[in-house]
Amino acid sequence: NAGVTQTPKFQVLKTGQSMTLQCAQDMNHEYMSWYRQDPGMGLRLIHYSVGAGITDQGEVPNGYNVSRSTTEDFPLRLLSAAPSQTSVYFCASSKTGGFIQYFGAGTRLSVL
Amino acid sequence: DAKTTQPPSMDCAEGRAANLPCNHSTISGNEYVYWYRQIHSQGPQYIIHGLKNNETNEMASLIITEDRKSSTLILPHATLRDTAVYYCIVRVGGNTPLVFGKGTRLSVIA
Image 1 (cartoon, helix red, strand yellow):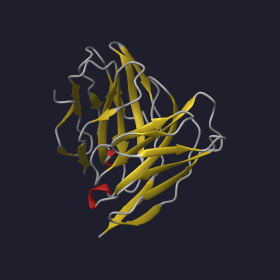
Image 2: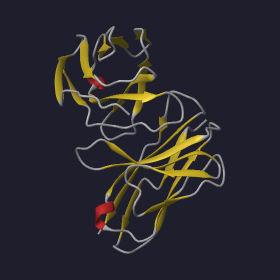
Image 3: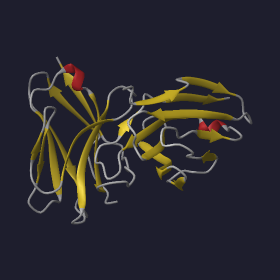
Image 4: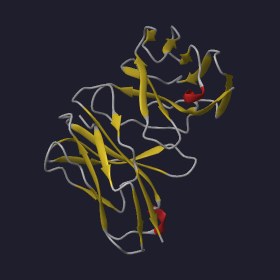
């Protein structure tokens, strides 16, 4: 049982490049979400999903796309990276109606 | 979600109890109080949650005032490994997003 796995752990992009941050969980959780954390700040919600085929926007969705084709995976896509997207990204999951959210170790992204 | 107010930082001597306060004066009747912590930029970790009653688990105790407008997280015997940012969050239970503030940075000192 690996929990929530995020890949890659580190990534450097050039402005305008695209990439996908991967998030996978093996706990059969329906609810998954993506956060970003800037230095000295709390986490801010980007997108979330309450189940396969269902996604919704969070507080800071601009510049990011998500899809949820399976229960296990919730990838986050940056279509055209900008320096303002330099941040640490965390993925989280929980079971339906669950009180506890489990977080991954994070992906540290730098956009030059 | 209701807003919470936490002190930006606190110190605690190793082995002593750490008492972390949180104000949530606009909390609704169906909102729970949650505590998470984040150790050195790792992913946040769930600690405890409660609705009305005081709660205790292997990590901490949660004391909620009778009017539910504030709460205190208690780490009974703080260790150096408890140094972290602690987030107090109020939220309706279930599949709703966690809204993080800036939290309290707890430094446990030897």
